[in-house]
Image (tube, rainbow, N blue to C red; front, top):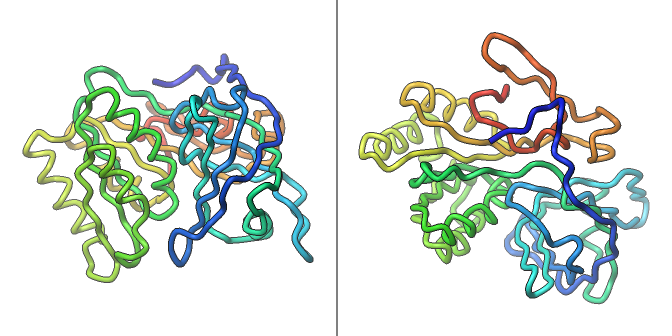
Length: 274
């Protein structure tokens, strides 16, 4: 489930220039970019990420690469997808890319999700672009015959991400929103608690939200349900050298330091600290 931080996995990765096939809005906040990528960067696993060399745009001059979770990959078709929100200089540069342009990518990087055989009933809980990280996991769950529930949280229903994609992978999709109050901690605790009582949850998966992390930690501890989280963190190198992405984790009665890019970005939910 987790690699010893003293002996981290050595992921196979490559630096290539991939061709942009499309780069289009999917709603009022997010864009989906699809690349034609060579085989050497398509030996991916759900939960891994790439470091993107974002282009310059006007006054924006991104200096460092930007880490981005994999939204989709298909080695047979030679396709790689990223879902992103325009939030700064790097993503503003990404939004300028047009079909036929090249994008320098480095990856796949990091340690992805695990899926032990005994985890048959999986619950995915995430919000916004955090759902992008879980999309490849849902595809793998379908391929392995797991039962999947995806709770997709958003400010409004029209901003809920990847609902049709999760349904195409056989998931039961539940959309909760700030607008109607269904995304509140109290509402989610009742919703998830009901599924647990019915024996429909063997493991949790989440990404990003500290509020959701704390809720899943509480429910997991109370009911003995394990799970994993893909941590979001600013990075510089993405390969473990610069130490810029170190975070604290609770292991037993100790606090340990781990690099999100190298020992993660996926960690046991119980060990993550919001």
